[in-house]
Length: 123
Picture 1 (cartoon, rainbow, N blue to C red):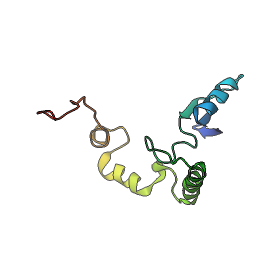
Picture 2 (picture 1 turned 30 degrees about the vertical axis):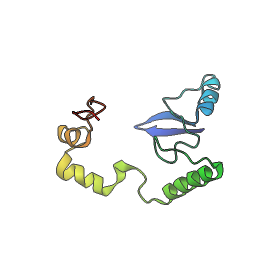
Picture 3 (picture 1 turned 180 degrees about the vertical axis):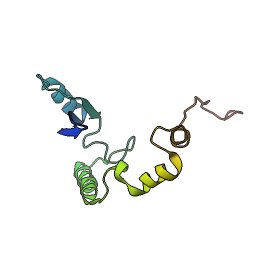
């Protein structure tokens, strides 16, 4: 479980992240007067280090090594926040206008539609 307080536009925003449902339960049980603005719960122990929906290795040591690797790589990055990425800033300035613009929404958002389980014609 991780907790942080972040200053945003003069406000202190309190956040928590729970990796695994057992940690989420502990977080909920410990809320005695704690004020969190955002809580993220990841069902996978270690935060789904293989990516959402990916099968986890059965060997817990491999899971711990993968988790350490992900965190180590993140700490070494010069740019760790997408909104500070100069390439992304330039893309918005030159082409997408601003986050949430009609153009950025049209080009960057995915639309889902219900589809038949099998293509027409069956199996």
